[in-house]
Image (cartoon, rainbow, N blue to C red; front, top):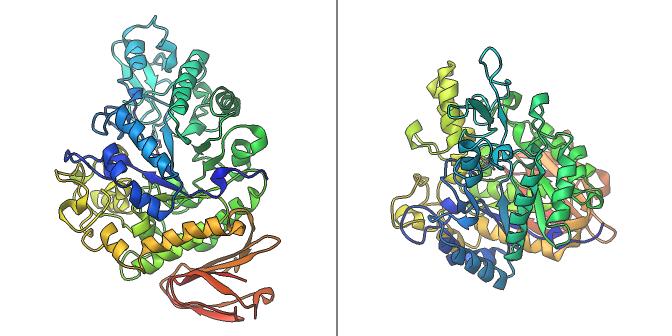
Length: 543
Ligand code: NOJ
């Protein structure tokens, strides 16, 4: 496989609203990010994926864009953006922008024009349909944020289509005039010196709604090839698509370098395993055997015809230490175990802000404390359909998106050092114990564990390119695997449980002298036939 710079890179995701507020308005901003670049450099990351900072009415915290070439005033200005690009570059850090082109805001001039003038050239940039003869909605497609995907527009006596909030009308990718506008905008950003794009819900742009197809439509890959050719294809950029419906077969279509589409995609199969029948508001416990099967399948199947992204967290997901680890007495140990398990796999790892200090989920007492549009919409839809308030609050505590969006904990001062003003959302009350200053002061902290993992990836090509071989596949508490190339051989063993467990290692590993690359408890010098693992124990050794 041809080597690319992003193969041994580690990406850090910033959700700007919740990262660091420099001007006391309670909302994180670009100057806040600039002030923390030294911190990020010390973690060792190569790339920042910046969630949207564009002009937006913030119905979905910036994933509803009203001007792709302007910065939202609460985040700063285009000068701040240029300063961020510059100062990040000085530290060897590239900035990947979030590209949200499945939809715009309803305040985007294209939509304003499309709505007010049916003869406008922008009319067909969006998806309009008449009501059915009986007055009902054109089809029964649901919005991902709850309710119908069709919104009645009184002014036009037609419906428009929105897969997210009704303030996020979907763009019509069947119109090639739209392609030109989007590609021009992407090239403008490329000219600013960005490191690439994270493509928001990109698997939806090939939709054929009259056939009831939203994700992975036939038109999708030709569109991505066209985008690639018109924009980033001949540049050395990282592109990562958000593709909820991807299987490994589909992921190869996106990320096989020969196909000239994207560098890699985010797949979510391991995430949705804890959603009963695909419903995040019906959480179910993790089945580790299934989880290992899914991750192993992705590791093995994308072996040499594509590239994996590796992530536990992002701004839409609960905090990993709460989800798969233990956020109480084993918080530090289990966070390190999870980090090792992920970062020793093949692919490009992503760290979500706060993950590197083991930030946890939050459990607000009342629904009024939540800000996320998806959470609030579903709370309404579900409680109106008879689901109890208690059930919903519990599900929100477990899977709601605000778990990831409470502000970053910088220190133990008021508002966790995030803002001098009133934060836009409440701070997790555990910030006096869990914060960056405390992590930097403790050489055994989760932060230094992540720092070590990032450095290991740079030092050992086997972590980047080696073969992935699963171990102990039927063990229901331990996730273990080998990484191997012609010169190096690594074994990773992680106890995903709060119990002490015994494992028997296969013969080919027994008695081999080894050195410990990273561990959350002690070192080993030889792999014995049987080992006892303490709760959440994990280690990676080089044979
Ligand atoms: C996926 C983003 O990650 C999420 O935060 C957003 O709400 C939807 N796409 C809509 O843009």
